[in-house]
Image (cartoon, rainbow, N blue to C red):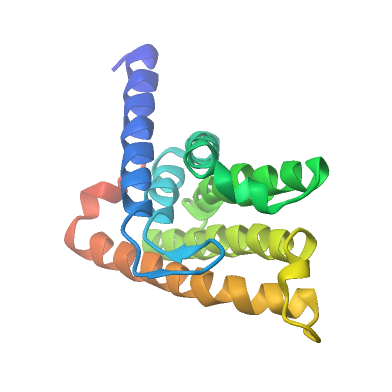
Length: 187
């Protein structure tokens, strides 16, 4: 396969992963009152990063984050200043999904490919949680109940949906790895 055909194939796969990620974002197992939900939407971007490397994974995550921002722009309006709105765009959308592509960092580190997939998935989910945590602490801390520190509030609020999402994504990836190993062939 030529280099151009290979890049075209990866771009098409990335577009399909973005479409799948967007569709999965609407299948919510739990919805939080002020944004965030338990979904499988991180899974296709993590898979893209694992299969094609960090560059393609991060690019796919970036495009999806931009699309999510457009589709859910009303969340940005919870922030009252221009600086906080920029922070929301970066932390809740752009960076939050771009870091999922870093799942490919461990794809070739371990002799056991599943260990690389799981380690990369956990790292990606942890980084996304970090973005949500920082956003909650820095931008939404004023929403914390009276007497509760914004850092603690952000940890509890974002952990309530990010931890179940991360576990769900890792479990589904493990099942897929077992039943459909060809999905995980790196190219």
